[in-house]
Amino acid sequence: MAFLELKGKKMPIPPQFRTQTELVNYLEILEQRIETLETENKEYKEAFSMPSGADVPVQAQKWLEKLLPQTNLLNHSFISRAFTVWGYYFAAQLIISAGALAVYLIVRVVLLVSGR
View (tube, rainbow, N blue to C red):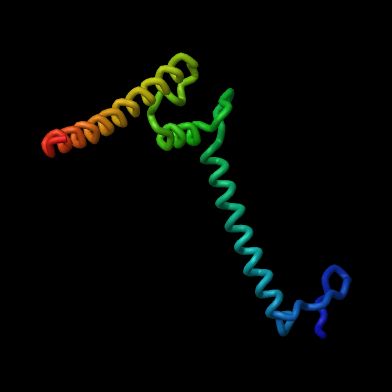
């Protein structure tokens, strides 16, 4: 079994690597990937930097405004939310009732035409 000397300690080389050179190359590649990810992370953090006194970064707030639907269900006012829910309920009831009425009328006309 091959050993890698690291900080004065001998550690076994994992079995997937045949030589110390392969292990070192693999670790260098991982270090480069980590540096790249840290750079990207830093860029994202700077992009979402918060202005003074803001609870949510401006870019995140704009993204949420685009993502969320424009409805009063998300309003801060309880009354606005309540009337919005009632309005949606009323509209749904009208649509369901219109469908039920159409089915009822069709059945009624069929029964009247058939002579019953």
